[in-house]
Length: 310
Ligand code: GLU
Ligand code: ZN
Image (tube, rainbow, N blue to C red; front, top):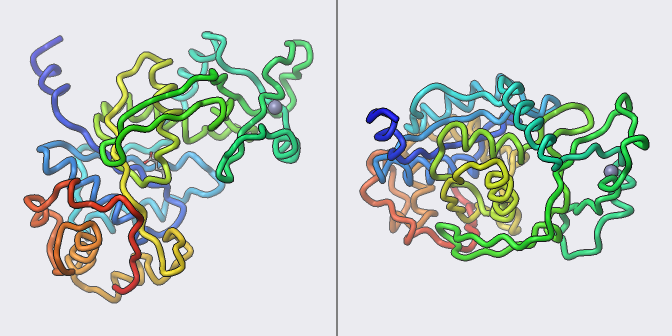
């Protein structure tokens, strides 16, 4: 290994990995800001990956607007943008690898069958596949019938320490069961793409919303199965509305087309989010760069944050 690559291996690499399924909203900006501040305050790089693998929901115009919004907010990324829709060959290569390890199988179940047979565990509304197709013999499987590809998950507890929420322990079989790597319609699944891309892009720090906290054990396990060194994970609280619901793309009033019209100065939005994150005593307009010396995870609350007035 040359000196250059060894030095490179020491640089902290964060990332922001939005799905371009709508205009960016305040919750996405909160995630981008925390992830940018965390990486940059440690002298790291911050990369942008567009998670546009779902052909039914992803749109290029949303991705382009998202890039424009990040620049407008003062959140520039390092290097070139990675587009998941261009990485099919990579996903295919590793899917074959998992197949050769005997860890994948085709699943012919319909959604209705999956719901009817789902494992009787505490799932918080998640669907845990019962493993119906796991034991099927080769001759029962018709190659030409559309099928999903599932990953065989062991009945194993995965323990890890989240950078903000501390020690976590999740049983893979109970929590997610054998999950999908490639959908019936041929689309790649988020869990496979995210693990491969974080590893192959050399990402060392993942900052994202706590809604993905319980996906982390799955990703750690898949990463270890493929022999990768996983990133350090830091999850942040979610922004919620007055009725306690997570902000989402349907809350039009908080999307950036509306916010940019209302607040001509991006620092007003950034300062408001920094206040919500516990970095400022009051919502004072400040740029991401000006916030760098004030950033510490120790100020960020753990409970979800109501974002009402902006
Ligand atoms: N693309 C995912 C989303 O927008 C985020 C994935 C991640 O940060 O791991 O929800
Ligand atoms: Zn099945």
